[in-house]
Length: 175
Ligand code: SME
Image (cartoon, rainbow, N blue to C red; front, side, top):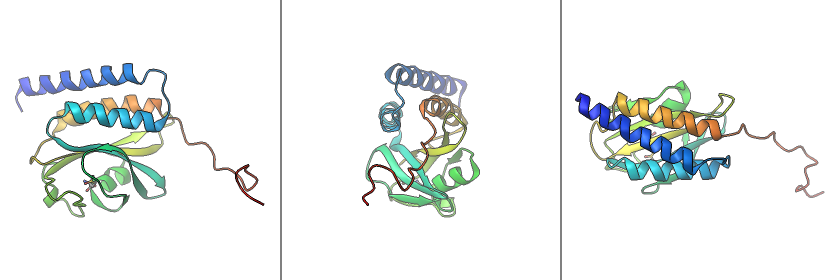
């Protein structure tokens, strides 16, 4: 990566962040937030073949959320794949060769590299991961990690913690 590449990526992610901040001003519906982020990022990151979210739906389990690209795997346990590693460790994963990553889930046989960034809500709870995949080898590096982490910080700030489970007397339960 040259300094010019780094600067170009910084600019691109900053623009994406500004665009999303304007688009999502006053929004806290998680579907709207994640769908808009997936759309904006997928359009801006030309080398992306798949851009989207996997949501934490139970302890140790991710389920697909809003995304752009071909159909992805529906569920990923925390102990599988790059998404699982990001969720399990709470740390961004930059994988330059998915074939060399133990347990990589090949939803798309043409996928060669990817980056996955954990998403935390306003209270710091892990609620999802942002996954960007590419058909190009080594498509992402530390500049992408920093750029996507800044986008994810914006997204996470818009996400409320989940409301408590309804009790047995909730209105929708039948006697
Ligand atoms: N690349 C992911 C799997 C999800 S999809 O391919 C959309 C992984 O190994 O975690």
